Image (cartoon, rainbow, N blue to C red; front, side):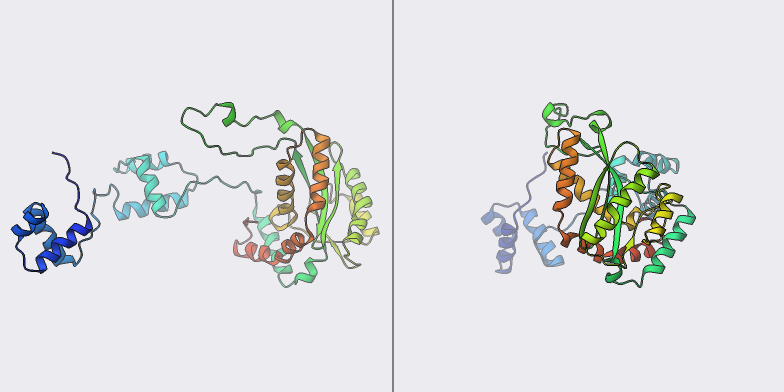
Length: 340
């Protein structure tokens, strides 16, 4: 015998109203064409709970007890890279057999969801120490100090992008339809290396690096672009130059030139791209350039130059003015990587 359809809330309310008016169970059953036992059950539940709305059912007994759930959550928190299948095996070894779906539901209920691990630089104890020291030494610096910093960095931009994700709407079995695939080219179809700088007042020079950058190439870039960019951005005389600790940057020849040119260099903690706001600018630039779909390397370089110059000074200032938040984040993370 199939499961009977549940009565509507309106019909249940009519049953209660008729009962309150003094009608018998049989009379209500006959008038509304509802079985007498059903009428009796609805009236009884109303007297106990004060409502005709269906209350939550207990459902099937859970496979995992509350203690087992807590143990499962502790296991995943202590081993974030463990797979759902491995969790099932570990529970089965302890005498509890559950499905992957059950593990997934329990973890979701506790706010734990499978996500891609973010790729971040490897930080050793010495890196944590220097990052914390940098944050502590500069925590009291106000916006005026950071607005005088000329930030710099290099990056590689590939012609067709690399490791990018693209989502499509498709039906089952249509995964390999040409419209639902993303063509790839080895090594991203070629790439260019760029050096650039910026400050709170706007974007500075953007230079293409030919071949593999050596210390001599880096020195030439600084000689040709550093001071002109600082003058064009209106940094005045007391500006500070930021660069990371790449061996080319810290080479003897580069250090000597910076000293002779009387350019003050910001002492920088290694493995700390999250402390450099120019990384956010790279992300903006790459998205804008790839949205224009360059077809060859010369066009890629042209689009980079155009989009770099199109970045508004207001966006640069907003990024730099919030710099103290990065230092606070490093302190709160005890030197470990942050969301920036």
